[in-house]
Image (cartoon, rainbow, N blue to C red; front, top):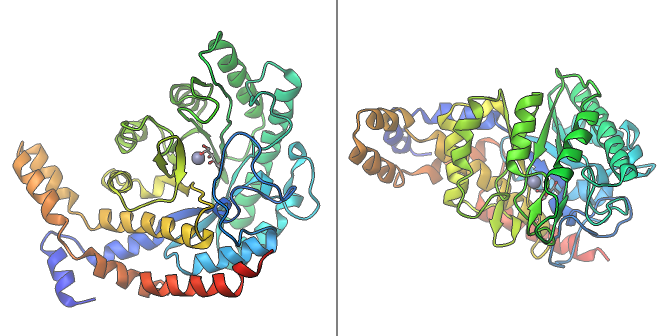
Length: 410
Ligand code: RNT
Ligand code: ZN
């Protein structure tokens, strides 16, 4: 990096080296499910209800070995500290019924994480299952169905606890359900009351708070559930606050004109930690690959401004089956890192001071001035320090991997 770059930032009171050190510490939880279109290892099929993935680009990972090979390639080109975000359907070895998953099915993952010095996070898989009736799970009118998923979630808490203990870093268990209705409901309260009771039963299991946290993830609508989502934002926000668990914000799960970044400062005043699925909504889909756009930047900016980088679970959540999946994982994760870097290279003190002095002209001028600073040189330096290649370098290598390995898969 040129000396002038550091000097330019120093003029605004920004220490580039400090920013790089802080960035390298932020843990990004890389979601394994981009690599196989959320298929999982249970029956090597594809999604059957709850969420959708589209595209049939060749080379999708079909089993644990293929998936970890792909993951290893992706991790090489993602700088910074990392965790891997798993779903219950990525159980390995002796595959059991979803409700019976336990630590035995995740030992291989723990070994994988230990060897690479990674953390693990976990999500119960409450979709693609014959035990969803009419798309309903924890809010189903059917007790047998609710009990099935309650058991799955309790076992999921135990697996998350195991991750936290084994890897000596906190693990997150995040609960998302697809429950909702296509048409305006006859009864809105009933399903929500049942969801509340189901969650209460799950939380009767007293997990070890020293090694894990639990979060609940809301959604605004999905295909087939256009009129009503049981686990809405208000529902889970209230539930999380009352029960001392975390409310997870999936940045793709809000109305298109709603600013998710704006929610951060409100939530952190009332919750010790926040959890995210960072994603990109496009029309009906909530899970496009992250671009370095204003929405992503706004989220990263808020995390830095609020000084809560050590109080967030930052998981990624997107899946695109229409492009090279390893590349998709790398592009999105690098964009998350870039947004955080840009946020760390911003003189928030100067901006806040101007705002508090009612000097809104200065705020606007400075915000725009910063955009012309040479952050890309700092980014290249970061990638070099972290042993990751620059943009054209990683792309070339992944294309080579595609030719040698991915295209040879059946
Ligand atoms: C779906 C939710 C959920 C899933 C993943 C696979 O809309 O965002 O988090 O994407 O758990
Ligand atoms: Zn999500």
